[in-house]
Image 1: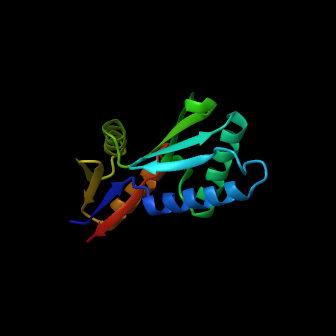
Image 2: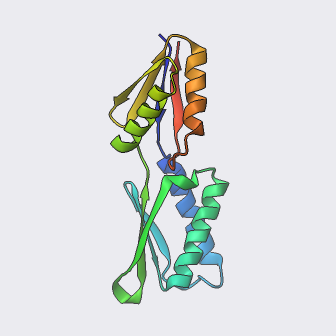
Image 3: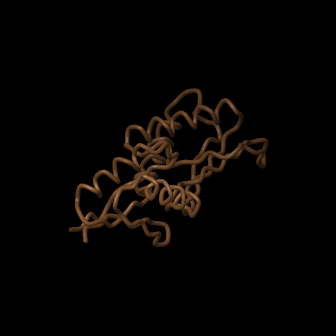
Length: 161
């Protein structure tokens, strides 16, 4: 029986490349050079530190620019509120989206079942497995899921006959 998986994974190596490019440009720009602007990654969390809100905004724009260059989905990062840090600086945490959470999995499963496409959807950890009798149903399911307005990047992998 043909099947495929719906996953939400962000390539951490590409995120590291984005961080490196952003930091390289930060050191070269006259408005950011010499300031305490940095981005670090620990597991699935980025931490941006800047002197003031203007520099934090500039750092965020640079990060988004390098994400576009490296073709990393903008929706894969969730920006949290900036907070005060030591030394009069600002700190902003950014979560990297990995996996499909339970609420989103239930939403997708419910929508696919109500669409009357003859497929079965099962949740396997942070992934969804969609299986059906023919390839056309699976392709129409992929198009249906793409048409749902989901604020998370989804990939469709492991297509099997």
